[in-house]
Structures are given as C-alpha cells and as structure tokens.
Amino acid sequence: MEIKVLFFGVLAEVTGTNCKHYREVRSIGDLKHRIQDDFPEVVHYNYRFSLNDEIINNDPKLNDGDEVALMPPFAGG
Image 1 (cartoon, rainbow, N blue to C red):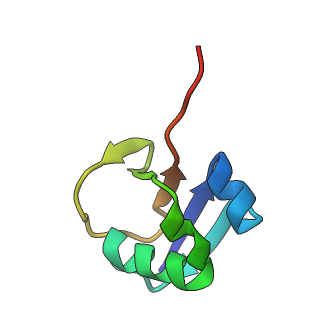
Image 2 (tube, one colour):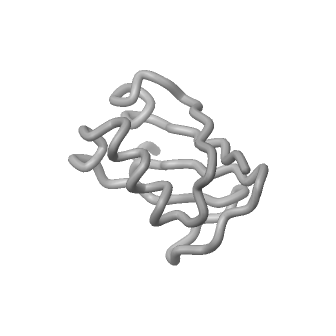
C-alpha cells in the first residue's frame, strides 16, 4: 500500500520537497506521526489535511493510491 503526500506553501519549504510517498500507512493519524518523524519541524506549523482533494476533519482509513495534501493557512486577496 502506498500513499502520495503533497506539501504546499511553507510546508514544502520546511520539508524540502513538494511530494513524498509513504508505504504501509493506515490512517491520517499514522501518516501524521510518520511525517513528524521524517520532518520534526512541521510541528511548529498549522496545517490541514486534504484526502483526494477534500478537506478532512477526522481520521479516515487510507487506501492504496490515496493522495493526501498538507495545506498551511492561505492568505491573499
């Protein structure tokens, strides 16, 4: 099982990448821990998760091929 993770804005700068693949991740909670293990500095930033282009507020089960995005607050006008 493989999940594609996209990083946007300041999170792409902090992680040094805009995309990373994770294997054997079963939930957003598991993924969050793996990301924080790989990039400990992300704990200092606010962000939301999107699963397959939909903002989520819970901890759904992930499936092979899912795309998860970490999105910091956006500003602009």
